[in-house]
Image 1: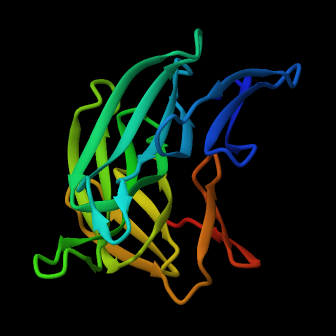
Image 2: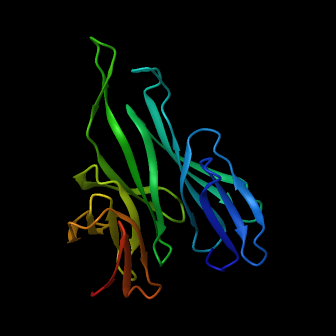
Length: 232
């Protein structure tokens, strides 16, 4: 959290749940349940009032036939006072399996919330065989007003199967650094949707961290780590 009081982590005990620790004592303050689906990403709001959770609600399947052709990515807000949910934002999409939120970030000026939405596959049921026929997809980045949590923008990655893992807003610019497992780093203008390819042919990007002053970006890709200077 911004005040340094709490640390939140996902994947607690391999259960798909999350956990919140108190930094000063190391004790567990809350376990974030996952009754349906899996918890993938966590972020504290800049004012410290909320913990924002990205969750995947999976489609139910029996054999090769889809009995429920709906899945849902869900953004949940939990109070950092009670650790109880205060609001859910559902991002349903028909005919998509394993629809997940893999990255959550706030802009430094607290105006925007950005999330990456990754459907692993989509398509339709073949009426002749009853089998599910998959098609490739493109990942999305959705932008919300951080105060109202109303969606104000949605952008699609230029790469199929990009697997957007990392998002960071640049300081004093309405732009996102987008790190992908598709071995690329892009700069996305959140007002126009224009994107610029900054780096390519990298190992799969799993993590990226922007320095607090916005001058440097550390990127973890495969077994390598690179540090880049941000030049405006």
